[in-house]
Amino acid sequence: MRVISRMMLGTAALLVSAAALSAQTPFDVFFNTEKLSAMIAKAKNERKPDQGNFVQPLWAFPPYHASLEYRVHGIDTPPNVHEQDKEIIYVVQGGAKLTMGGHLRDEHRTNAANRQGSAVEGGTAQHIGKGAWLVVPENTPHSFTEIEDTLVIISLHVPKDGATK
Image 1 (cartoon, rainbow, N blue to C red):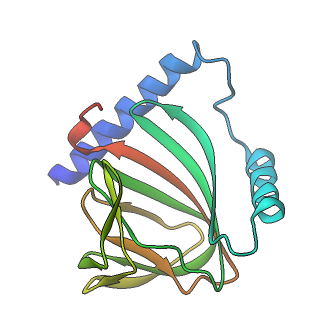
Image 2: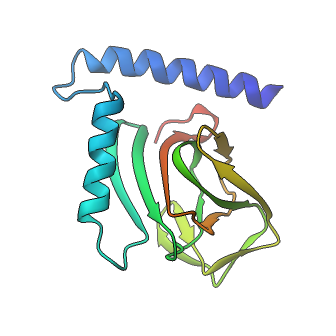
């Protein structure tokens, strides 16, 4: 229950912050179906053949940021651990196997707050599909594999325990 309360508080804070900042921000923070469809088309057209994940920013109100991620069948992207952020994910289109937990094989640091590996070992796998919402807690290995054609997600990074960076 504490986790849900923290998430609700964090989401409320995010919405209030976004509303306050949107009045001061010169870029658009509203994304309707047409804009999301255009971003998906852009990802499909501009993604390099060997690029497993094409990421486009939706908005950033530090310390929060959201992205649209477009992943394709046949190219698994490296699993990650976000040490400072929990990741709230909404599946816009497609499906995949999501593995969370366990530990990273061949772990290496990608920057001050993130690590990658070659696989997640010992995690729990489940199928995710269109319409799914999920939360990957901070410091949790996670990977998307067995992509069905394409997987399009909206990924919202929220600092752990509401801390600011």
